[in-house]
Image 1 (cartoon, each protein chain N blue to C red):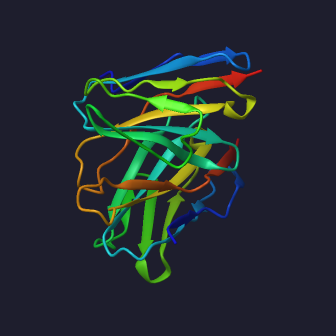
Image 2: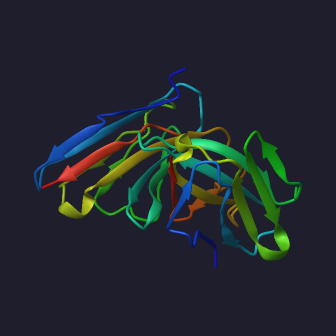
Length: 115
Length: 119
């Protein structure tokens, strides 16, 4: 059972570099999202997608881009990394659009450090 | 306002003690879902339970139990006879339907409670 797969698990970037966090799910989920987790802040939504070709901003979208060309993949791009983007990133997916009760399944997290 | 509050930042207990993690939520919606997730030291987020707003029955699963009370907007989580393996950060989350018909739901997470179970 692959579920939600994120890569890389650990990454160190220099300020100003760009990179892409990959996320793939094999559960045919329509809804995918990216969260960041910071100490004392819980999980905050960066971007989400309700289906292929459709994305929207979450709570903290600045400095990040996403695209959803297929149902399975939802990469997160850091355009010009800043130390404030040092965080743990979680990709998540769930089935269905209109139901508010569907369980979110999370990837294992990506630890990103920007120096 | 829509919010989830986990006032306990960190709790330490000795193995075999019972412990309750508090979760208080705020919403004006009548239809919503509540969740608990566990984040062990390895970092992944593990789904524990989902409860909808129309079902106030308590849930028990092994050593875990959940007490949902709409009157106090709380969804508390109790671990009975805690074990070292229960050491983790626990997140409570609220899922809401958006006001727009074509929109999607959103999840609001609490800031988490770190539970340390000492041997």
